[in-house]
Image (cartoon, rainbow over all chains, first blue to last red):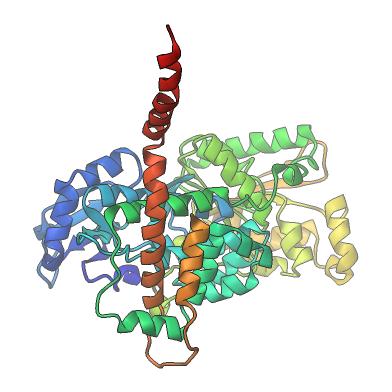
Length: 454
Length: 70
C-alpha cells in the first residue's frame, strides 16, 4: 500500500488482509512521547484517533528495523475528501483542529493536517495517522497551518458559497486546493470577513515570490508561542464553524416525496428480505438519494456506503446519519458514469471505486432508467459494470411507460427500442442468476434480486 | 483583532514583486502564521480569562456603592 510511502516515520502495509503500521527506529522518541504523554489514550477514548494494538514485530517479516508494529482498528470503507460532502469535510477539519489543540497541550504537535489522514466510521470522522504527532520545540510555528488551509479551509469556503464542483477539483489537487485559486474564485465580499481575509486571501498573497523570499531570507525561523498556537487553532475553528452550510434543508425536502408511501413501504420490505436472505457483510446503495434504504442496512450494523451524484442528497444523507449517530452508514458523492479513479504516484496512492469493491450486495433502486436512458449506457454494459461492483444486486426495473422514464425518453427517443424488460432480463441474466422477481405495489416497476453466477 | 492581524500582514506584503525560482511558497505562510498568532494570542488570553476579567470589573464597579451603604 503506497498511500503512506512519503512518511519517513513509518509505513503502512497489508498483512494477512489487515492494515498494519510500522514505526521506524528514527521516530521512536516521538511515538513513545505520544503514548507516555497520555495524548494517545485521551484521543482514542474521545473517539478522535484510531485505536491500535502493538504486536510482536516478529509476526511480520520486514526488511528494515522496526521500533513498533501496530495493528490499527480496520476502517470498513476507505473514502477520500473529493467524495465527501461539505459537512463531512467540515467535521474532518474540526477533528484535525481538536487533535492539534490536544497535542499542543500535551507538549507535542500535529505535523500534518492532510484531509487524507481522516477516515469515516459511518458519520464519525477518525484521525488514522498515528505517526502524525511529534515532540514540539518550545516556540515553533504549527508546521501544518499551510496544509490545513489548502486541504480544509479553501475547499470549505468555496463549497459554503454553493461551489459544488470544488469536490471534483480536490481530485486534481491531491495536496489541497491552491490558495490563490480559492482566493480568486471567492466573491469579493469575503475580503470583508476577517477570518477568510487572514487565513485565505492574505495567505494566498503570502505565496507571492517576494514575500516567500523575504521569509526565506530571515535567519530566524518564525516564532510562535504555545498560547499563540492555541489562539490560531481557536480562531481557525471559529472561522470554519461560521461558514454557512451550502444549502438549507428546505431545498432538499422534495427528494423522497415523489414515491407513494405504499410503494416505498413495499421497497423497504424487499430490501429487508434481501438482507435477511443474503446476510451481506457490505452493502452499497447506488443512487442512494438521502439514504432511506441505506439505513435499513446500516441499522443492522452492516457497513453501508450510500453513493449519489447529487451533492444535496449526499449532504442530507450525511446529516441524517450524523443526527442518528450512525456508525455504519457513510454517504459519499459519486458519479457512477465517472467514478473515482486510482490517483497519485503510480496511480496507487488513492484507490479507485472499483478497487474498493466488490460489495456483497448493491441496492440499485430507481437507478437504472437514469443510467440507461439519461446517460445512454446500454443494458448489457450496465450489467457488466454493476457485476464489477457487486456480488448481488437488488435492482429495480423501471419500465419505459413509467412517468420518470417517459421524461428521460423524451430527451433520448432513440433509446426506447433496446430498453425493454426482456432485454433487461437477458442482459443481467448473462452476469447474474435471477433469485426473485417482485412487482412493486402501486407501480409498474419490478424489483429483482440477482446473485452472481458461480 | 483579526482586522489588526490582517493589516499587519498586509504591511509585510508591500514588497517588490520580483520573481525567484526555487522558492518555498510555504515560507510566507510561516511568516503570516507568526504575525497572526502573536496578535490573536491577546484576544485568546482575554477570551480564556473573560469570566475573571468580568468578575474583576464587577468588583471594582460595586465597591463605590458598597462604601455608600450605611
